Length: 189
Image (cartoon, rainbow, N blue to C red; front, side):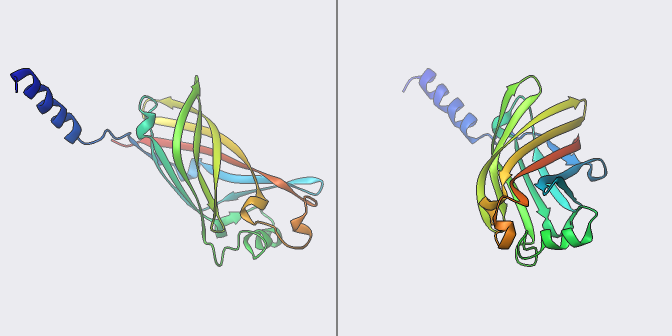
């Protein structure tokens, strides 16, 4: 075996054994961030946020192959300011928080669209039911800070939310639910 071939094989072995690149980790500032949803309920939209959730984010706009997000939401932390409505949303016909304490979104890939526009494709799990969801978002990065705005529309019926009685119909509560994300984060060092 020639020196050139042996050197090429040696270089290939070193490259193959090198650890995979990792996108930088970002820490979400929960006080400046919001995660919530809205749904048309009768003549008015019902809007709520989650007070408790965690996001594990690794992101590099130049290395989307190693970028990811894993968001876990405490569904019992949902709040709209209407205690009676919140009890229903968190109850048996809603999120069924007593049995399914968390919802989760895990990316399967992140793609750049143009400018500051991206889309996070992933699996959303609510009430133990997992569906593919695309979350379009914009991202502004300035130094070690980032601000992300995004929204996606899902059908509550796909996740068994509001399945009984009048809630199993598209009125008074619409099937379409808009998930909204407004995150402020700092890049780890």
